Image 1: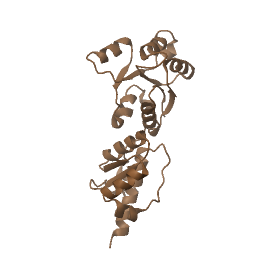
Image 2: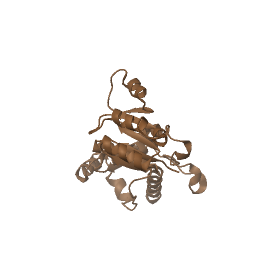
Image 3: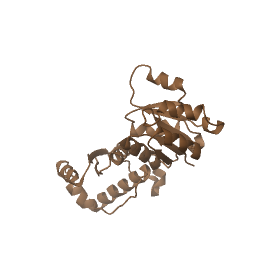
Image 4: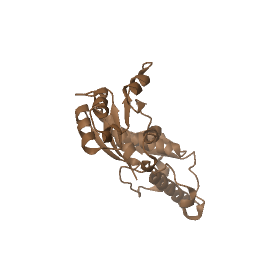
Length: 234
């Protein structure tokens, strides 16, 4: 199963990153950009969990929480609400929890930890079954080579959310990652990091549809590297 998660966040970049990460791990995301719409959506959709920024237009996070926890029915009051904020003053966390938030995440979020942090507030049945890597037994013969830490992967994507997610997935599997935000920047990185020969050997023959699932990404890269090794062998 997967969870239906409502995100109330007015910053497009933050919304994009959180949405991408949750969707990549199989969850359904409802996105709204102000507090009033967040309350309306929560009442209408009854999500499994709500992630709420503290500083919001029209109604701040505390106002949203009051509407959800004090002025709504039992079904809505039982939904976990996690505060997300860049506040860093002593006592901020205690203030948020005392106000009634079920949890607290600081900004900027940590992409490699975010989904796990959110799932702590979900029933176990709603946790993602997707992992960063698959067991060796899933590969024919059961003897798949683990990623070689000398392998470098160039990631070219104009979306920050995509770059950060792919980077954390690859680095978690032992790869060295070089990031580029445009084709021009990618070509520059390509020559700087001496990727040219490896790219010519591998070719651009694999395609993944977004949002990318981490374990599929790792599997595709490992398949490409194994193929390149076989083709370059004497």
